Length: 351
Image 1 (cartoon, rainbow, N blue to C red):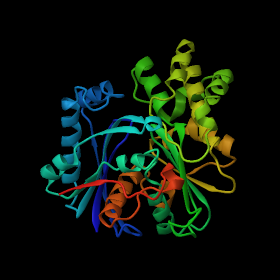
Image 2 (cartoon, helix red, strand yellow):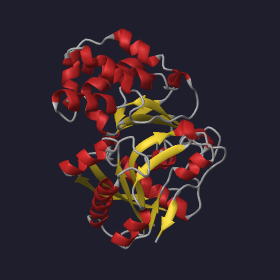
Image 3 (cartoon, rainbow, N blue to C red):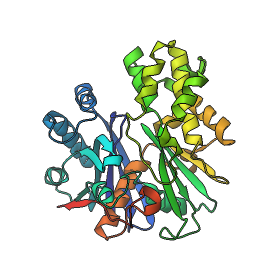
Image 4 (tube, rainbow, N blue to C red):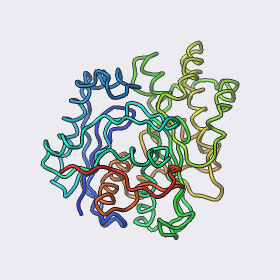
């Protein structure tokens, strides 16, 4: 089937859209992509609603999400199905709650396409964390790329997550796919840059590179019990904002350096032994963060673009892949990826 996957991450900069041809198990081809940016007023509205649960005054934000996603679908050839993640506003796995803004039935009406959406709820109802959801796609992607060694797929979005993939094992085999969020990726630093300096991010990590890391603050932040938990786990975008408050008294460069060091160190805490690393997501463009990761991991994670892929579109492709899996009744999450009690086929279908 030909699917269009849609993703709007916690950076809230816009919507990624990508075509994938797949049977829900293997990848036949990766096709055209598109990115549509949220207008400034839409970004402001969405940021104002971060942390909101259903029932809040969300109608304007909902309209922004729905119409930009519809435009993203229209920017590509019409598919057999659309995978619609929606816009995460709040995620509370400890209390089995998650909120992705977006109505799949409304998107189906606007686009004239079959839409699979609400990917997280069924997983959380089965005791899962609701995230990360892309590991099964990472397994298929490893096979598509012809990888043979254990590989960690590191996604640096607002939150960082890893998929530990054994490409020589089928995706349902024990040990083939494991995953977890590791903590923050770009969210803390981006929020600091926006509120303190009026910039959307630390371009290439230049500000952080000129600062001094406050190691005491990093160590204290890493003592959060969340980091000691093993196995699948997920994090909310704003979960570690305590450190963001603590660096406000520091000079700009020292604050940026400390937040970057915390991100790199938290990722390294989850690193498995004997694996190659591939990195994707916007954070891979931050040279300072990548250098810190190389120090902690003993290797520089390889940019997935070097393998001929688009590291900005992996998650969009993943939700196209997952949509086809849902249509075929295949699992979208496993006990080893989200902690669910059994393999779960998540997602609702709207036609």
